[in-house]
Amino acid sequence: MCAYIQVIKTKTKFVILMHTHEFKKIKNGTGHFTHLSLENSEIYVGSEFANHNAVNALIDDKNNNCYVLYPSYESLVLNDTPFPSNGKQNVVFLIDSTWHNATKLLRDSPNVQALPKISFTHTKNSEFKIKEQPMDLCLSTIESTLCVLELLTLNGDEDLSASVLDGFLQPFRKMIEYQVKCTRLENKSPRFRV
Image (tube, rainbow, N blue to C red; front, side, top):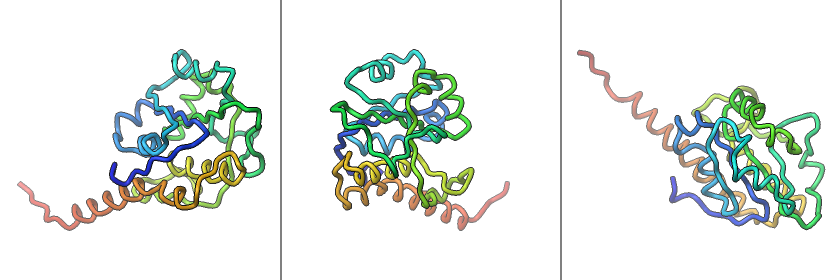
């Protein structure tokens, strides 16, 4: 899938916090694609990040405005509000995990949990045909990141072209296409019993 990745530059730094279970089960998951597609990104693997040196350094850096993408009643909804323009770098933490593990990861990482939450509203259904989503409108990590990039561009926090945004999901779509093809081939192959 690497051939389909188009690396883009963003003003916003993205930090993917990948849950250990996600790392173990899927080496080419959407968190990896997100990281590989964003030049200004970092990825860390763990089940909690309370004492993670690199994560805490980003949070403690006075030159950063740090946020975590997570739905909450107190969220800054990107559809309505741009980031504060105070000359600092905006850092968005993304949790790459199932909803169940994301909740636990946030609970066990009070440093990340204490960050202001951002969210967005949308009407998109996930293109992740090979994975059942827990509810309508739930998106994968890379799809959620695309929504954030689109809204940051709309709000003037980023200046990404429509063609760049359109190509962002290309490795994800090619992965799904490949896995659907493999499933079809598997279903067509004869089964032998001993």
